[in-house]
Image 1 (spheres, rainbow, N blue to C red):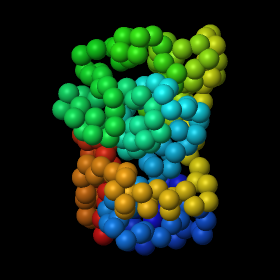
Image 2: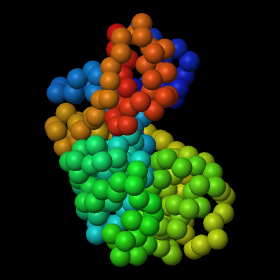
Image 3: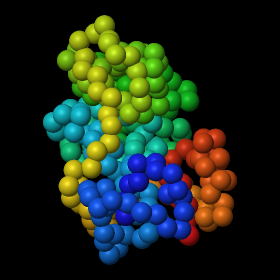
Image 4: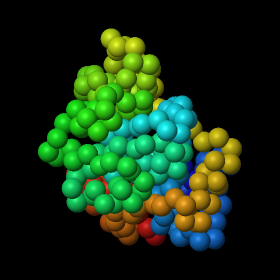
Amino acid sequence: MTYTHFHPGTIAEYTTVAVGPNVAKRPTGLDAVRGAALPATSLTAECVMAAAEAEAGRTMLIIGATGGVGSFTVQLAAQAGLRVLATAAPADADYVRSLGANDVIDYTSTDPVKEAQRLAGGRLDVVLDLINRGPALLDTADAVKDGGRLLSTLMGPETFERDITVVYVRMSAPEGKLRHLAERVAAGTLSVEIAATYPLDDAPKALAEFASGRYSRGKVVVTV
């Protein structure tokens, strides 16, 4: 398994990657399809949790909980002892709960920020927004309590008027981390959601349908 950093030519039967922490042997019990979906999403989720700096018992809102990074973060946060509030469409509510979310917010019928504050009884310790970028993050920041942390994998404002810590998370791969995550998936303590698989000849179609937003949860995998 490897994370290729979006290098050209990686949707191919063969590619080359440098030896390092982005490469790990796929353990017994982890099939190739789930192994392909694992690196970028799980490593990013690990970086999110490191940036959250949240102890057990804290409350975390995850906006965009059904995607690749979101679904891993729900699992990692729940297993770390956090109370997890997660956004999802009604059809995905049971799925998000199965990942460990304590409360599911229907973003199609409610304002996630206001509903999260209602459920938590006030502003939250940590908010991860995987959906909104730019000025839209200013609205999300209203869910964060003073001294809390707002996390995003997208770009946004450099400064916020309130006393919160904002972290724009970028993925990194500490030595051994990918191997450890793969072993957890193989052991069944973490799950990987596969939205669809496409043969290599249909790679353009896979990219187009992924970009269209057709799949609300999990990852799309191109197979050979």
